[in-house]
Image 1 (cartoon, rainbow, N blue to C red):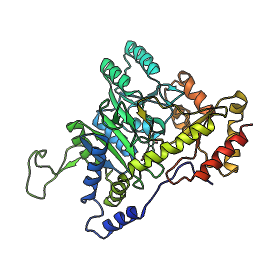
Image 2 (tube, protein in one colour):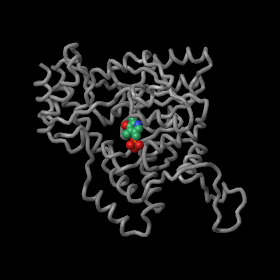
Image 3 (cartoon, rainbow, N blue to C red):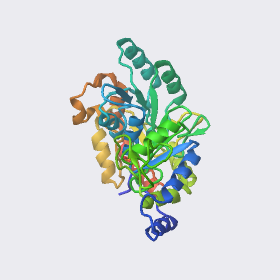
Length: 384
Ligand SMILES: *Cc1c(COP(=O)(O)O)cnc(C)c1O
């Protein structure tokens, strides 16, 4: 089966991890800050906090932004559940903004409309989480303008999008947001096994997230209220153990040296799909001018009603032909856990249509030309 995504590990990645195994520090050593510096300089943000997953990064980011009981967080329904679960961890409630079907991203006019309504009823969100679906940035300039008008914070879920660009800047520069979060799960653009990172330009958010990552503890003499001696540390808030190990950071640091190569190859695969699939009755992913997608995923949408009716059959026919398709994502409000919550299903018709027709087809760094031809041929055969 040709997978929809997978990691690409080089001999130097392996050597980098083995070097840490032979070193004095497996965790809390020198490689973690090196990996953080590599990511923050690559994405053009001042500060980075590495953690053991993007889910943890979303959690500490929300806490640093002050999300708590009684607050509302808005995100896209077409995302992995972690984007909204993180708000629930903080005791907040969640609501969903419909998407733009062409990109799969949160629709900025739906957002503007929903904000006007929420403003009248006094139910404005504290934080909005734009998710850069498939690595294709949301319309951040508009989202930033709305955040200034309506007074919410912006937390980018850039789990798919390291290496992408928007408005001439790397995704993660935080020019339009307070914090951006990346995932290093093996199917994502670069990997650390499990891992994630939060980046920001705000010193205070950085300092809070660093403490939250490690039990809420600080050893920094500038932050300690009163020291009893050199052994002294202080727990100043309730944090977690969300630390990344040096083993994981070494893999990430080594993978960062190939980030550009990964992005180029993924875009090359995507343009071959764009060319060869344009003849089929499919809606292909749209990337706006001035945006560079990291091409984490390539999501096609069935166009003809007779195909949409056979969505599940077409999906399993592709798997039967050795094409490891997937579906990103089931709208979060459809999850049984979310059913008891006060989410407005009917207000996301675009997300519903997208879910009824979307299929993610294989795209990853080691994918061969022949594998890609197999995918294209299989699609042409099943779409009769
Ligand atoms: C993968 C992913 C996450 C969670 O990442 P982990 O590192 O697995 O915790 C969150 N949001 C989105 C959009 C993702 O794709």
